[in-house]
Image (tube, rainbow, N blue to C red; front, side, top):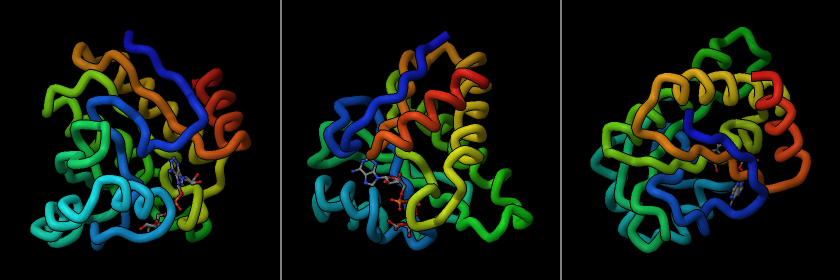
Amino acid sequence: MAEFDVIQGDITKSDVDAIVNAANTTLLGGGGVDGAIHRAAGLELFAACVPFNGCPTGEARITPGFLLPARWVIHTPGPVWRGGDHNEAVDLASCYRESLRLAVAKGCHTVDFPSISTGIYGYPLAEAATIATQTIASVLSQSETLTQVRLVAFDPKTATAYREAWAQA
Ligand code: APR
């Protein structure tokens, strides 16, 4: 089975086949990791996103990485946390599953994720980490293509949450 790792760092520096962007449904950029990825990739990334005319929560769209070291960027809008009874868990799991599905379809072997929805979208960290690691573990157990999937945490608390969740996954 492919390896899963948690590292702490800046996902725009990831030299992997694909990085995942915690986008919003307009796919036209924003703050947080979305803003960082668009700044690092350059204006061509914005131009490549316009034709999608947005993306529903839980789905994913793939574009080239342009000026990023990563070859591809997979854009997936995570759920906004609204208390937990608005399908948030299902939508968050779908972000990870659909992103990996697109990565495999493009022949990617290495994929880096940020902690989707746990920033501006307010998803509780421990719950999000559990959903993310369980979904990743399930996909990796059935994939021949993926060799490395990482969670790139931007801070130590996030890194610890995903390491603890992975240990239970
Ligand atoms: N590398 C890795 N992780 C990062 C980086 C970075 N350069 N910058 C921020 N993060 C982390 C945040 O610290 C958080 O842990 O990404 C995680 C997700 O936080 P957000 O970027 O706020 O994403 P999210 O909570 O999914 O909210 C999405 O924010 O940026 C806007 O356009 C985006 O409207 C959308 C919303």
